[in-house]
Image (cartoon, rainbow, N blue to C red):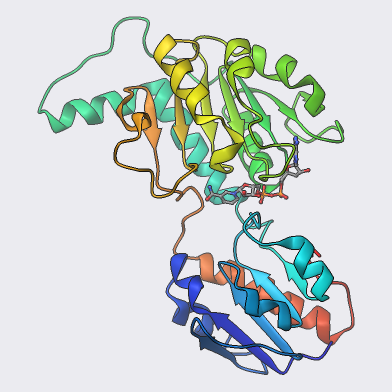
Length: 308
Ligand code: NAD
């Protein structure tokens, strides 16, 4: 493959000001150019994009600036002979810190004081309400970049970290690793269950009524993966019935989360608008991945983070 043009699809605007990425890649030859919806592609073209467009099938290589590529029709890329790469490997710190923020907020009850602050109310917690993360069990489902980012930080705070991984192989800072067929064993004793898996056929609806019945009634669900990994109706019922204590959600079936969603109104709920990976340095991380793969192509090496 020989790259003659690197096009930056305008959809990257959803994640960053495109010019920052153009500037961060200004050392590349050929130069990166911003293209608009409607642009056509052909042999020699590389595209850096947030979302998919069918015109990309005619390019040689497409880089998705997200870790989750579930909106890309992978099979069609494969048939078209177009390489697809993603941006896994860069969100461990951002999402790890956000998830620890959720955990600390819920355990130390910070959300309740912030809510009370809006009403100029001096709210003190009931005696048994607050707890510490130290000593509590957290189950991390999906031990890739996000999952390890969470596990490392949770372990540093003295949490008992267990996890779920397809291979079942051990992972640093995770005391017990379960295979997905032992999901219930993994989650049943956990105070926090964190979802950090990609959205696939296997993970769609992975957390539904039977899982909420299995979880502790004082447990919190954290979803930084994708909305459909959780059956939303079952989650709402579990929250209404007290089958679990609460949740922190960054990903939803429909985004933005509709105004009339029942999820907004639970007290023990933290809702963030799909921003757990947000950082003003995102363009630098993406530029490093693109630059590395351009070098790989020039050197005739295998692409990093290749999906197909
Ligand atoms: P990754 O590829 O590094 O890790 C995903 C891990 O999940 C892999 O280790 C994989 O083997 C594992 N996995 C797959 N199916 C599994 C299953 N059935 N059971 C247990 N483990 C399974 O990807 P990542 O960078 O950690 O991102 C993971 C997902 O998180 C992405 O696909 C994306 O959907 C989501 N994500 C969300 C945000 C956000 O802003 N909320 C940011 C980045 C990624």
